[in-house]
Amino acid sequence: MGNRPIKKFKSGSIEAAVWLNEREVDGNIVGFKTVSLRRSWRDREKDIWRDETVNLRKGDISKALLVLQKAQEEVLLNQEEREGVKNE
Image (cartoon, rainbow, N blue to C red; front, side, top):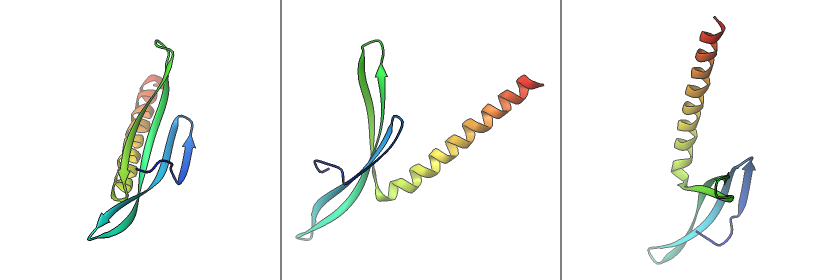
């Protein structure tokens, strides 16, 4: 990936960065974009900041969005089910 992202988006401890990359294909330089998704957190025991990063290609983004949406639905549905049991 390049030295600096061409665009960044952030929500709390989650940050997405869009990168412009180049590679040679059949003797021509071809540009393509990738996305890095980073989650940062503070390690209180060691008093340092940590992060995890995953790099996605264009075709990976829609798949990641789909599985994250499904995971969110599962978490929210299970939470409502647990709360429903407590309220009965």
